Structure formats: structure tokens, C-alpha cells
Amino acid sequence: MSKIDEYKIEQYIRFAEELTEEEKNEVERLIETSDEMQAIYLFLKQFYEEFDKASRVSKAVIPLTLLQKHQHSGPVVLAAMTKESSASGLVTKATLVSEERKTVVRILEDEQSHSLQFHVIGNQKQPNSYVILSLLNPQVDLVTNEKGKLKGVQELSDIDWSTVSTLLRIPVFKTTVHPGISNKSFNVKNESGQEVEIQKYDEHVQIKVKNEGSVLSRVLVVQDKSSDLIKMSGQPINFELTDPHSKAHLYFYE
Image (cartoon, rainbow, N blue to C red):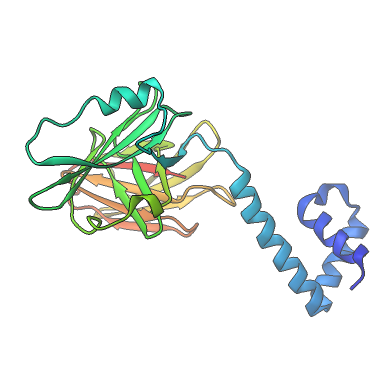
């Protein structure tokens, strides 16, 4: 394989609009007829997909860091730290922060049950209800309630928070499926152009992503007092309605 061929494949992936139709056809022929070219194409395509994901700055996904005891903190973090729980037997296990986004996640432990509580504290412009705390190692998603809190988590009591990477996911848009409507569909789109089609049947709902290469990764289904977090892979999602006569609230995340 010559360097010019590799360069053309990279151009084809990144800047196809700059190539002539003849050049595009030549690259496609090389990929189809050469195993080596096809391997290079697949490698570069996957590499740039991951690169674009890492480079994209999203207001809906907030990286958090562990607040160290000696660390100088801004006013938002200090204010959150002064709100120590007065409930007996609760101690602060860890505090995760984003000074840039003025966001704090306090992790409290019940000394008797060793269960954990998660309290999300943010600025007034940022909603705290139904946000997701995503742990990357181990891979766990924790969903808060409408008040930005989650209680009674048992499985993570022994975790070392200094070794865990965490993200806070804010809903990018939400919608409601109303009762009394069957076999009808409607579309929902947010300001950045992310769009989904929602089809309601008698006892279940189907969700389809309308954008190619969508960045939507999760949908939270809240029905009555229950909630279910579903990962999105680009394929249609189906879920049952626990009560066809009640509303189902849908929250979408990147």
C-alpha cells in the first residue's frame, strides 16, 4: 500500500466533499478489492469516530473529579459542604465536583446499614432531577429522583472513589406519553437537532432514533412510582406500559 492510497482513504473518511467523484470511486474500488485497504479503512473510520466523540464538548455530560481534603474549593463547593446532613449516623464518604459547571455530588454512608446516598447539587440553571451518575470503572449508572437524590445503594459501599472515573448526565430533552392515545406516533426534537419518533400502542411504546450517528445513549422511562433506564444503540426500543391509563415520562441523555 502506498502512502498516497492511505492518505486518500483518510480524506475519503474525513473530507469526502473535497474529493472528485472519480477520486471517490477510486477509493471505494481500492477498499473493495484489497483486504489491506479495507483493514486500513475500518481502522481509520473507527479511530475518527472515537476521536470525534472524545473531542465533542457536551453541556449534557459533566466530568467529575474527587474533591481532596486539601483542595482549594470555589464558593459552590464550599456551600455544598456546609450542608452536612443532620441525620444521625450519616457520614460523608466522598464529594465529586465540577468547579467549571458549579456542580457537586455528595456521597453519604449510613453507618448502620452501610448503604450509600447520592445528593446532586447544582446551579439554578441546571436541573438536578433525574440525572445519571455514570461510573466508568466499574460500569454502573445511578439515577436520582426528581429531587436529585438517590438513597439505599448497597452494592458500592466498599468502593474506593479515588480510583473511579465519573460522569454526570443531564437530560437533553424529555417528553410525555399520554394515556388514551393508541396506534399514533409523534416526533420530539431538541435544540441541537436530536430527534426521536415515539409510537404508542395499546400496551407498549416504541422509540426510534431519527438521526444517523445519534449521540443519544440512554432513555429513562418513569411510570407511576417506577423507573427503568434503557441504553440506546440506534435500534428501535420497545417497553411495556405498567398502566396504559397513566402517563409515561421519557428523559433522554447523551
